[in-house]
Length: 134
Image (cartoon, rainbow, N blue to C red; front, side):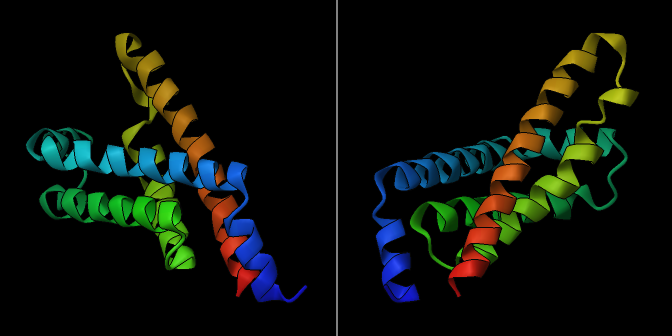
């Protein structure tokens, strides 16, 4: 079986397709929520001392949306998975720094940190797969 045929067969694999749709769809849903609550997202980033939050938050939300759509549809998969991984690698330790959070917020930040870490693992797995297909 050629690499192209193998790639096409994997795209039709129902569990893999469902996984891509769920993962990409959740990334897209998070991006949509960020766009809808942009002022609050920017204020939260500013509270974490993120410089240029008014530019970075919309930009990184766009990265997340692109990553989610690209992974779900498996279009530009290296770029999409790379965008999602970059977003998660940057946002997770800066925005969910549970070790610096006050006691009443620590558990919530830890939950987000762990969730994002798992999602980063998924994005890296998709990036690896995309690189192998080319």
